[in-house]
Amino acid sequence: MTDAVKLVYIETYGCQMNVADTDLIVGLLGRDGFTVTESPEEADVILVNTCAVRDNAEQRVYGRVGELKRHKRPGDVLGVVGCMAQRLGSALLDRIPSVDLVAGPDGYRALPELIRRAAEGTRTAEVEFKPWEHYEDVPPTPANRVSAFVTVQRGCNYRCTFCIVPMTRGPERSRKLADVVREVERHVNAGTTEVTLLGQTVNSYHDGTNDFADLLRAVGAVDGLRRLRFTSPHPNDFNDRVIDAMATVPEVCEHVHLPVQSGSSRVLKRMLRRYTREGYLDCVERLRAAIPNIALTTDIIVGFPGETEDDFLETESLVEAVQFDNAFTFKYSVRDGTPAVKIKDHIPDDVAGERLERLIATVRGVARGRNAGLVGSSHEVLVEKRARRGDLLQTRTRTNKVVLIDGDPQLVGSYLQVRLTGTTGSTFTGVPTSSARMLVVAE
Image 1: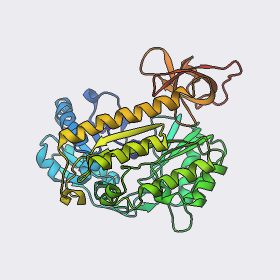
Image 2: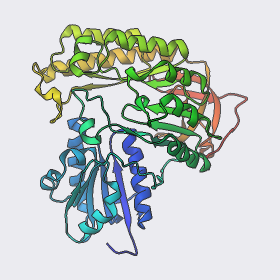
Image 3: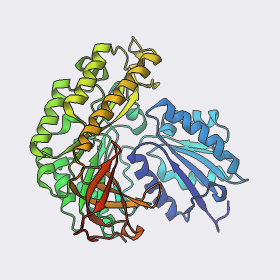
Image 4: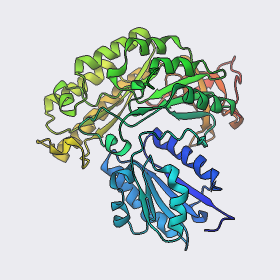
């Protein structure tokens, strides 16, 4: 690797926070003279930004790193960063000899030096937790100017028994409100009109003076911001102040991703989720009372140790009671280092798999019914990008519904009014209404 040409290729797996971290890495390496390339074949440095939430995510990384190593030339660097890197640390260097560096989420500032050392033949891991690290001096370089992710909180203090995040992201800490607002202003000044605030339990945000309600009001007041989203919240942190801010700040979109994990209070207790089925339903009721047209999505785990058929049926009944617009559903995945490993009565894989299939059918049925009821209605959409298939554009409503429309790619970044003409059960087709016009374009 020469100083004249320094190209970095980054693949990102996992949650939105990893996407935001990749933008951060691009900004950080950009200060060191690196340019992003979309081709691993021509890259001097290849980085894989990883997830550790489930075992299959890590297995996918092992396979992908094995594929990427064939692109290494003498002096090139192959690195694994992110949550899997944090969880395994230097052991990852032993498991994958082709990997030259490992860096956890708090170690990105060291990447330029780690890369230099790796190019010279020294393999290194940087996985020390740094509770002060928010990378405030490193402006992220987002690949997407239409909608931006802004990390407001790192780490988690909840310590659910199934979750590896406290071990990969460390204890919870929040950025100062003024720093978050400045970052949002930078995005808006660059042409972005939609921002998503990120945190492991984002609505528990508190910078010592300001809480999440204050943050929503301050960010919503940024001139030029049109839409404000956040993820992922915890049900216990939707106090009256937060819900009131959501209901009264016009920029806050009418959608909440509200992880439930199980509909059984008995399983929730084993998960250490710190709420009951009734408490979760109360949170849903308060959100819908304040924001009647709110869309709710969720995360659900089946097959948690000790889950009985009756527990599972309670989860199914909760899906039907809440009428979720969508749900991400998973079989429980054992993660070494989490308390759940020690819980007895692990569920056979075939039983968990059968329950997952039934749950998916229930979720799809509920979502299909809700979405069918929206056909014919009109909504404001943000044109996000070209759709993956055909010559369509992908757009999104304030309630997080994906709508595919015909249109000129120059409309990307615009806001249109569309009428929903059909649904597959999950996504919609739509047509701009006669009064549709391009309102805002992200440059």
